[in-house]
Image (cartoon, rainbow, N blue to C red; front, side, top):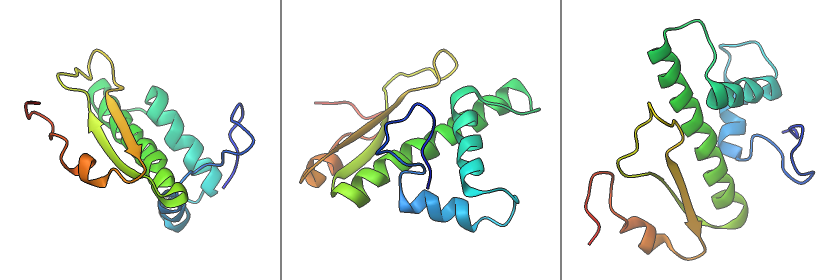
Length: 123
């Protein structure tokens, strides 16, 4: 793991063991794990690549979800939090790509499991 510029000294990236393993074990791209994470973060932030705008948005959303899952899993692995990734209701990713909600806390697994799925009405 490594520290990103501008990050607090106690934060290392990737945050989770899960993503560290995924980036370390991929034999597809001959890059250091740090460089893979940096590229992933750039795609999540600004969406880069030679593809169409629609494909770029899809790749950006996928990379953003991986980064968010990394954050959630780090909270679960390192701190024992119960976690869940959700989407903002009626969110239009064409207007604003960041519609994820990272939810977590100690001893709240039952509450998180009972949260409505996307599209369900809240009572």
